[in-house]
Length: 544
Image (tube, rainbow, N blue to C red; front, side):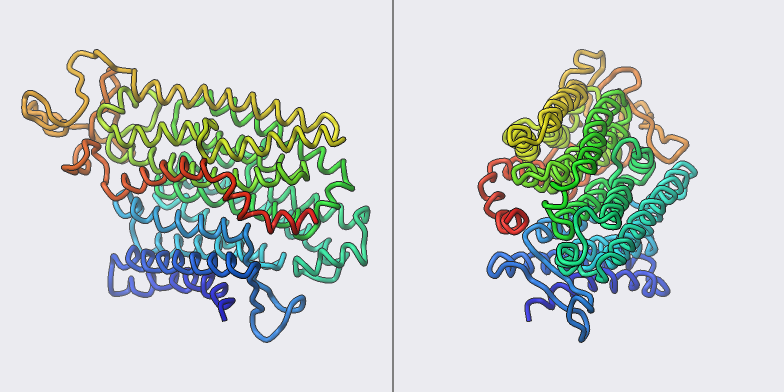
């Protein structure tokens, strides 16, 4: 009966999404509590599903009384469990930040739980059409959450994402329709069999189906040059929304690309269609270079790391197209690692904005003096994004790079070597903008007259209550003007959170989560062999 955990995991956040609105008829602030209970339950369910998969292998559940391939099947294996745990952990952890940073309101938490439910269903479904349904649930809820602060800029960013996301979903659905015409089934495993028995890897319908699905998911993932929605969406969304969207939404779409490519179409299809994989590698290489270069040109922190995601997901697309076991392992590790890294980075950026009004690179003068723990955690996560060992970011890039070289040496042509070179160049770009952030944290503003590094000063006054009657000013858009416009050190905004245990003027619970995330990315960097052992059953099945 352990397979019933699968539908329960999907139903829990989806059913809970109705409660904030229903309870809102009587209680104005019921949303956060409902979301906290639902995501905590999801975390427990994810852990239980993970244990079952670790003990007995792939777990499946047929909904209703109809067995697959006629009925709808839910499936959990080593790949889906890894992404499911990421979804559960990030969605639960983000709530601690959302409680203090906003947005608030029961309708926001209903949308939040709808997003979590859609992500959970997307990860666990074994049916291509239901994957489309969950992609749409994720998309619709994300559009609403991006516009949750009701500003004109966020509404515009949401509208841009709505248009692009609708096109992507339509292309995906059209591809699924072509595959259904060729095979007569929508179940992933059954379609794999039918492609081999009824159609062929050279069937125009099958080729067109895969090309359309890849194009649709590419829009959702935001690879270059169809990435324009992502920087605006990340920058203009409320900070708590950016945190979960950056960590999970494109990650789930990239998971869908891996799942469809290797569970439905298989590695043999990729090997038999060089034209498709070559185009994917070209797009991936362009995405890696363009995303990294554009990130290095940014001064807005959220926009900088949004462009960084364009590059990082390009690496995952390249890993899929290489159709190589080592590269695919790297793509999977990078998928999970990047989600964790971006969660931590956007949480850290959100905390600096909440506590100090810092949103631009120039706002970060000597941030590590005023916020040593927050600054240190963000710096550590940034180095992980570069790929400095030991970190989960290094493991993913290393495996993809080695797999790319193996592909070329194994007769795959020069494309693999090209991808390895592109990843190396991208790493240098990533180092350049992460180094700029770290330089501002630790070296900018040193020696500025009147500068402070913490809350305790010789005059006995706090930064936000300085005896001269002046506090950090509030900007017209509701944010805070930087206190570092004169080149001085970072200073807290009025009313910033205070803890007697740390000098950082940020919410303690969110700070603890940020630090734990930073250490987790380093700890996973030491777990290369354990990660290989965990994903080995999936890889063995794919490349058997």
